Length: 97
Image (cartoon, rainbow, N blue to C red):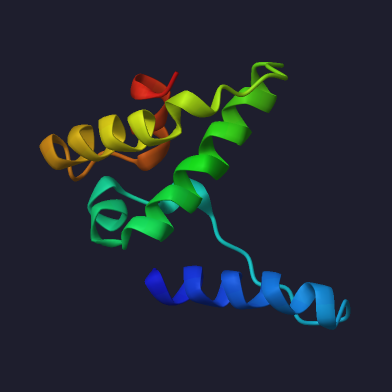
């Protein structure tokens, strides 16, 4: 799973250089809390921010309060520590503001 995230980051970086680069996809619904807790802090922030954006768009929320970024990531991490088999999407739904 970490390999997929690294490949996605590399593909994003090369998107600016070579628009015709190969696509790499990540199914965010397959990330478990155990996977999430195994990532480094930067990757956790990246995934947390993506999830927050996804759910904000889904709920038609157009304003994002940056004060809650680190708080949400910490809450999700604590939730995932208690329930490692839970999906990350469930953790975000139940904990993010």
